[in-house]
Image 1 (tube, rainbow, N blue to C red):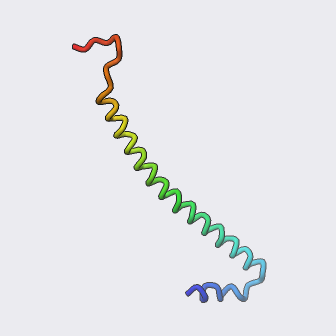
Image 2: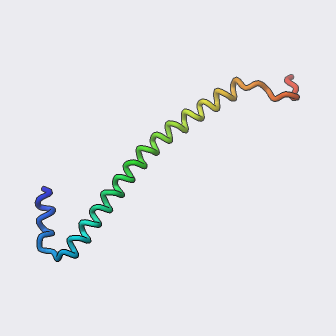
Image 3: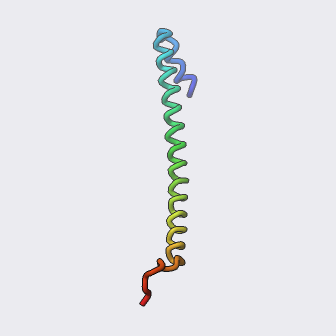
Length: 71
């Protein structure tokens, strides 16, 4: 299939081929960025959930502030 995709470019002027190649390279880089950010976002979400759990646990075992009366 890729040979068919590349074959239609053969008749184009060199400048157009260069532009297309540049655009394809840029598109590929953007796809890699999106993929990386999606996976990073998932990791961040896990970290955030873990951090929330840690904070909740700390709040459960935290002693009351000094100077306050507990009735």
